[in-house]
Length: 167
Image (cartoon, rainbow, N blue to C red; front, side):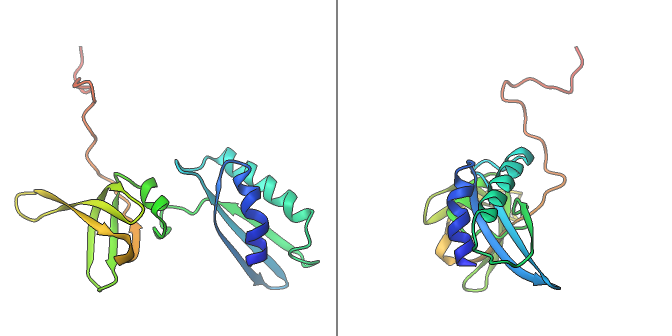
């Protein structure tokens, strides 16, 4: 797995993406190589296709997998990927995250800003719908995942206009 990662990291970076993870498993008599790629702003299908082609070419010209037949899957990590790196947190500024701390406490908060060692989060208090901000040290996070929001209220237009009013 580490040999595959070492081969593919510069190849993926050459396409403008980042190598998030490499998973190698055996299914029947075949190897399945799953490569997860992303960018700082999210990845498009065209960018995944470019990374997939580059990864395939690199594997074809290398013997890192030996003569084993394999199936290659290249995709983005998806919304349910745990936030494990500061860059994952940065990609999700403005989103709601469910956090389990190393001390076992849990919280749900909106990510406001991110530094290399912590995230500024906004917590909704039960008192009159007020919010408060606090800093969450990333070292104190055991697990964090983005919460999918289906009915978040739309933001008002920045110019103050009301798009729902007919002229």
